[in-house]
Length: 156
Image (cartoon, rainbow, N blue to C red):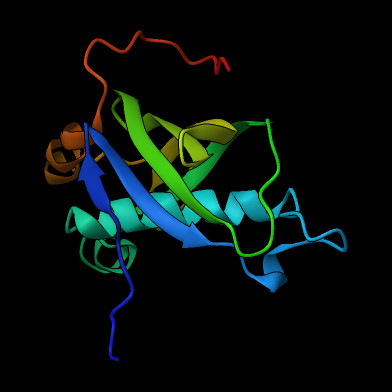
């Protein structure tokens, strides 16, 4: 079998990335180690961009745009265990000039395991903020919540 890795799919205005929990993701008790959730969330954001045709490498090489997490608030609600299949669900909140809010959660079936809200910024090669490119803004509108309140404060 020659299956390609999945970039997930867009469903109901959000990106959904299925993941399996491997031994390397867990602690001695077989539960996902808390810091590994940050890696899973990063995969969700990366695969969202890839699915929208906005890969990190191309944005950096062609436009000089790098993505950085400026702020992250995460709430761990329930554990995931070895061999569980989880989904990372990603959507956008407010799209500002050089930054945007991202809302993510991990679920197992209908059960929410982890919730996170982030502020992600676009930085140029010199380390200064740069505007979100118009074509990226248009692409992200597919997973942007309509009527998101303008707030620079993360609320969980």
